[in-house]
Image (tube, rainbow over the protein chains, first blue to last red):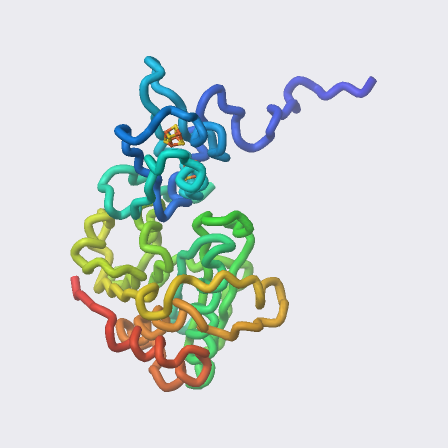
Length: 108
Length: 201
Ligand code: SF4
Ligand code: SF4
């Protein structure tokens, strides 16, 4: 059988090291113009946002009491806003927030 | 080699791709009418076929023939144009800019408010803010003109028109008349030229 010498082995996925949790080399928050903002009063924990987000940016907090948003990887597609069952989510312009600056030097 | 005037446009993949391309094409075509040597191009380095991803478009304008072989990026832009204001948080848009360069941003915010997000603003000679969305409506989502296809909606039918007008006003690199000869939405072009707020730094 053909065998690749050990020193020529390439990690699976090739260019970007495979992340265990989040990949700090592929932060994608600079894709978004609007971010979803949650009103915890209205949210009934239906988990639609968690289910529909294509980037896995919504999850429950440890106590399972409220939804937590991941600012680093949300691309601002706003699918969660349209799928929210209680209108707890609304879009807000990114420049309305001082935080969340990534300012990449090189895109990749 | 002659001075080459470099314009870099930051836009977003797919959704505002045409608008970004239209800005560089309009500026290059207008300068061409004024007898300049021009180039307008983009490349695949930014992987532009992803909705919302930050991507760049380039133009070069010069009095003499432009000889920049194997260089597919403007390394030291004189002008940087931001098609979606939120990009200033996500990327160091002034990277490589020549001292005294001009930043043109599509925003209804004031220059002061926009500068808050630009820590390396000392490089800038001026910042120009123009509410291109407000003038021309939302970005045209249109694939025509992409990859050699026929451009059905025309050059500068959307927010690219006021942005090109703002560049003309803030930098003087081309004049309004030559832009008007190549841009589809002349009214928006003129309004961009007139309504842009320029702040010298
Ligand atoms: S805007 Fe899109 S990417 Fe961001 S949290 Fe909502 S669904 Fe996920
Ligand atoms: S979709 Fe809306 S109501 Fe449901 S968990 Fe998410 S924020 Fe709460």
